[in-house]
Image 1 (cartoon, rainbow, N blue to C red):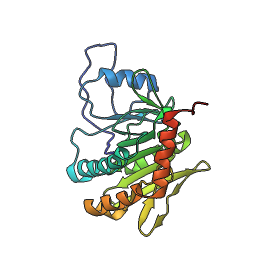
Image 2 (image 1 turned 45 degrees about the vertical axis):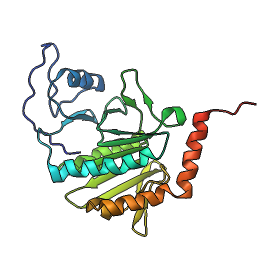
Image 3 (image 1 turned 135 degrees about the vertical axis):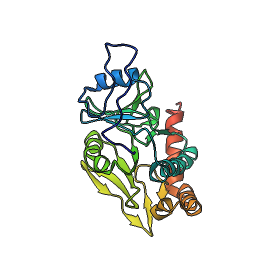
Image 4 (image 1 turned 90 degrees about the vertical axis):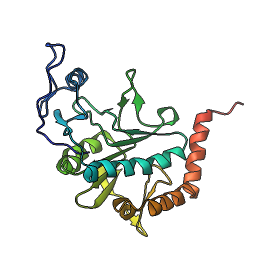
Length: 242
């Protein structure tokens, strides 16, 4: 995610009773959503620990747009081969009363198949996604501090941050209430929540699509991914008839 805390003033809404959403506002989640819905022209806004952060009007190609597309492509390839997994790009998540982030990527196990989230009547994800991903340039201080603590406290099981300017990918796993880095083996990081989701971080950083997809396909061909797909299919089928 690319954020800054100072943006041009938003145009007033058609309803003078609803103030426009502004960066730095201290709001409840309900008021944040009310102003977000009523303020035109906003590309992205998040509520983190009761404070509003908003995306800049221009999104940089190399620092956000292109890395974001590569991250979504990698996750999307996994999702397409894993029935029962759902993926979203830049969708709001209601975590708690003070936090409604909008991760660059959210991947969940379908709630009907045992996932830990749910979808509200107004089509917003509620609860902690199994995986949240952020493409981080100017927002590193938020993504690696306050947002990390929010995700940890609310039970996001894995958190991936691509620090674009630092050319570094941090992928954390929630263990006993703390985030610990997932360990690399032979240069590959393997998800513990989504079996078969394998990442060559150097290939992703260097936009080496051939290597990135080759490693992911190895994960998709692994016995643990096959077992995961069978498990999700079994849950979808429901209990066997006597």
